[in-house]
Amino acid sequence: MFKSVIRWFWYAILLSLIALVVLQFWFFAHIWYWADHEPESTAFMRARLEILREDEPKAKLSHRWVPYNRISSHLKRAVIASEDDKFIEHTGFDWEAMQKAYEKNLREGEIVSGASTIPQQLAKNLFLSGSRTWWRKGQEAVITAMLETVLTKRRILEMYLNVAEWGDGVYGAEAAARYHFGTTAAALSAEQAARLAVMLPSPRSYPPGRDTLYLQGRTATILGRMQYARIP
Image (cartoon, rainbow, N blue to C red; front, side, top):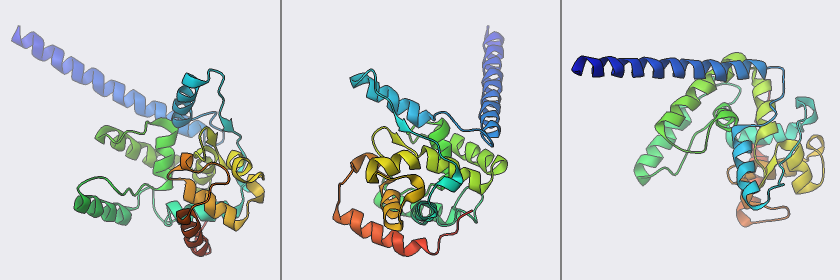
């Protein structure tokens, strides 16, 4: 009896490992396909649509993919300046920023600061949930490495700008530009781009036309940093 239990235990472990490997191949296959195809949706988009349809069964997301050359360079610079100023240099992870965030969280006794790079945020948006479990963070790291291996920096930034959330049910630079400013992603001014970049950590907090002292101050900071941001 004891031997039988041990044998089934190892079978279960083996099956779990096989399932984990298959899952990684599934992630990799999608990323490889997306090197020259547009993702129709992301895990974050599908999850948000489910929530919206609980109150409005016919709810739809506002999302329209636009190619890299039809996104304002101001927005590219603003997002890099705000979210990941070492985007061009690193290979998916900003270890220095992660160390600073760890030390700050240790001092505060809770998670108050993160250090996710653009590739890490893209990995999470494409495939994962918003939870902060160790399993999810580990899977995020693996997917981030895949993105950096398979895709160019230009493609990573293009995908990120096309799937990032910029309002409740509003995804991507084109939808964001139209929703907040009544213009296109290509026509965004430097100040408009900086304001959109500031909204990224809490996109549903900023309906069109909303203005706060924080938004004004942070926008001015990003505007000052944009000239130093390197884009692919």
